Image (tube, rainbow, N blue to C red; front, side, top):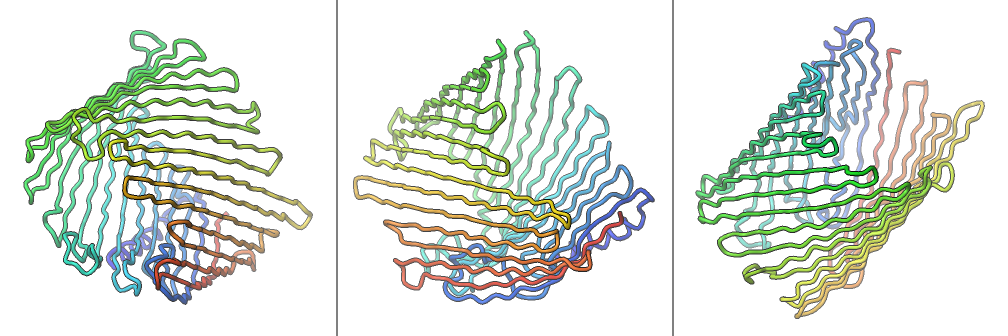
Length: 528
């Protein structure tokens, strides 16, 4: 309720501000009022898309966009103001001075079939940027995320450590100063802080901060070499349980454009984390080398990285290899990319849980625009992960294809426009270990068509379908239909009907069906 009141206060503040605008001000906006009707049955916890649909009458949208004068611009947009699940955003900027942005949204989460165990997360983010000089940039932001309500312990029915309720506040803040010189030299100083409080379990309380600095030096030593140096220090503390960590990092990146088609990049990263409670220090080093070669319509790249983790209990090293080849048509009508990467871990002292791991991934992508208004493309990826010490292996194949078509007819009485889009994804994932195997296939189908006739009649239809098979048997679908009509030039009415379905054919009672109708009427205004 407090957040809803704040949104209404913001609306009240905007009205006198608009009244104070000068003769050069220009405004447009929209006010919409309507309601939601929902009929659902089954396990309401399985369909996340309906968690934040609430029945009732509400101001479905309030939007204001324009300027007070030639230099001061405002954008305000709020949805669902009088029901749960409301959202709002404000953007105010003045040329040559800065910009203020604020955003609020709330989401509900349901954990049981009857919808009795519910929690609400509210998220408010605000940021202020000041540009008093062209070479100076100052910014700061603050984020508050609250979580209230109930939850289900794990296992269900057992008094577990995670508890049966939420009552937490997560605060994040950041301040940054950045300066730039006309020679290309730039630097920044940044402070990040975080504080988590829990009204139910004080053991979750956490405080932390990071202070970091960044310096960019182009042309140092030679004009073809650019250096970037970054360092940070920080600490994190759980005061109730007496645990604390100290963090120190140093990073260097060098980019060399030795010849026009060739570019080299080297990155060094070192970090140290000191766990005071466990008296354990972890050191991490990374060395990355990458090369890019571009010739006409082709771009080839390859790289190698070595990484090491060293603490008082174990030593692990990683070898990372990557390579890619990209091609594109001069007129951007067709483009493609082929990539391959590996990441292998070696447990030097056989102390970690998974021991050695081997990971590999191959990707291929193709996008094309064969004719005006038509876009098609496809992707394929194959990935493997092996844990030889545990006799386990995971393999996955993902294939997708998409296409869209845009049609426009310009007649004497107006424009008729239509957009058709479709997307298909297929996945095949298999996991084997010494005790058994697990295999899942998945299919995702999405399609949508939009029609606009003379900017008076708007219609749309969409389908989303998910099928999970083999060792699971789940089907999920969403059908959507929309119709809108504009009358008296500034008024319009909209209606939307959605059908939600979920079926788990292996678990009894695990199903859900919902029919939802949205109806609203809007008024659009403009001072132009």
